[in-house]
Figure 1 (tube, one colour):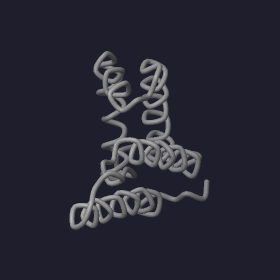
Figure 2 (cartoon, helix red, strand yellow):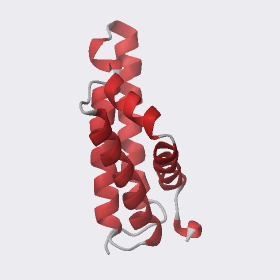
Figure 3 (spheres, one colour):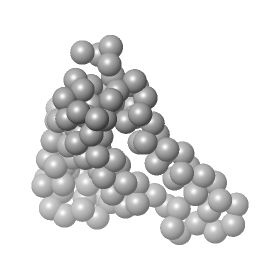
Length: 117
């Protein structure tokens, strides 16, 4: 199973496991970024990270798993990124980070896994 997994997929799977085993910290994280109720957002993130990663890793409905993980990552990035409040060179650096993060999502789908299932 892990032979088909990219590093990004494995990290997202591990992130879901960590959130599941430390649910109170996951709830606090969601509430810190303004997502209320925190328990519902934390549960949704855990489900998407676990199921989405497994779909991509196993190659079964990989397109669906990659899409769900991409949406989760986009929502988290835009909610948590300080890019929107930055000025000057810091804003440029934040913009570059945002572009790199979105590029990693696309590569996780096109890396060693097929998104055509």
